[in-house]
View (spheres, rainbow, N blue to C red):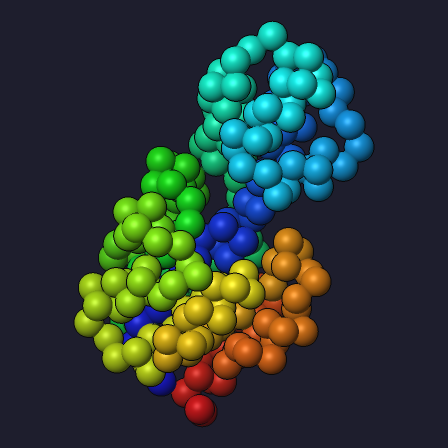
Length: 220
């Protein structure tokens, strides 16, 4: 049974994970500088401050670290405002959920300023009763607080509330808290697809087949 759904945004609804891997490269390109091969991998484990320091030293940039950070953030914001697209089937899937009177909220690790304009532009914001962000909740998805807040807002039972997620660590958190899990494929989590399949109640390669999803849910 499903009475409520909590959707992750990046990698689940929006095809946006690539920006976090190539924001540095895009920023340098705006400056007319060609980035090194695999810059995204080099910067992946760095904080924004560390990444800015690396770019400044490696490419001899004549900007302060704060200016570089602002430039990277502007690059990311521009991507969300003008370029990011929905993953396959998303709008139709959300429409079918609405027809079934399933309450929906969104739970994101990204800042509200990044995702709201994108969701408005892509015409999916209206499907959600509320958007919850980790920064506003005060903790990341290694803890279930954001999912519990969304469930409480929808006033649904935890066993009838499904979390749609693409990130393995977030899936584990929601599962351990008692939620039902719809694991959603994203290339950024390619190396943990086996684990995601095993822990999910339903595994979805994309959101193109609502009928198959709801039939599985109703027969559980």
